[in-house]
Image (tube, rainbow, N blue to C red; front, side):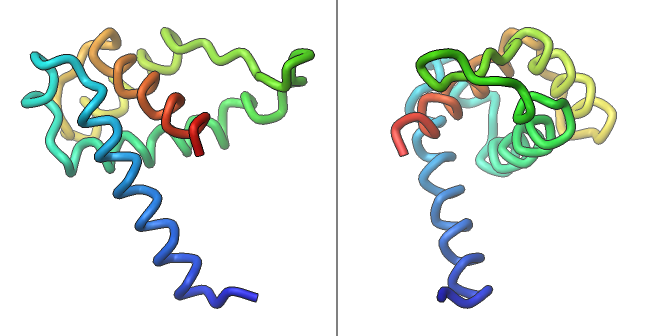
Length: 108
């Protein structure tokens, strides 16, 4: 059984790989808009959104996928980032981060 330290280290490595993947996937005009720190922040917001929105409680389709309203999620994350003074981002900009994170998670 892995120790808590091992699990935390693995989580940190997974997050670092996710951030690197997202940075590669962002359109050129957004690569400079999102700092590495902000991308880590959005990873946390995405995980929190999944945990609190009920998305994870939805019944998967026949292929095992759950429908996620990216537009709604991006709007919520945009509001949260502004509220917490992490930057001003449009939902459209954040949707690129969400979609890249989903692509990363699907590839894992």
